Amino acid sequence: MLDQTRGRPGILADDTTTAYFAELPAIFGDSGGPVIEASTHKALGIASGIGVTVPPSTLLGPTVEGTLNTLAAHGFPVQLVTG
Image: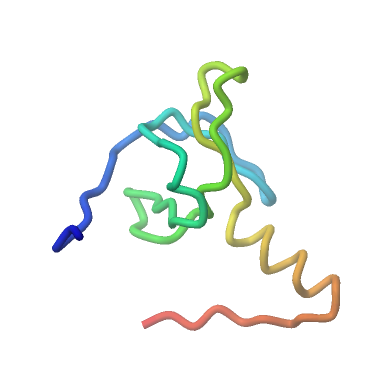
């Protein structure tokens, strides 16, 4: 077991209110982990898939904003607590 984790820097290729696409090191097993926007130090989204057939993107997933909106649309008004 690792005592600590290390960030893996990458490049954000594209993002919308519902999804992001990034060029960064990822491997199977990363799914469900956080993706952080380095310039803001805020959560961008969740590691969900490796898009090896969608150059230049190698990692893709839902954004935090999109996830919260989807939950609210289905009757789950979740609020993000920070701090």
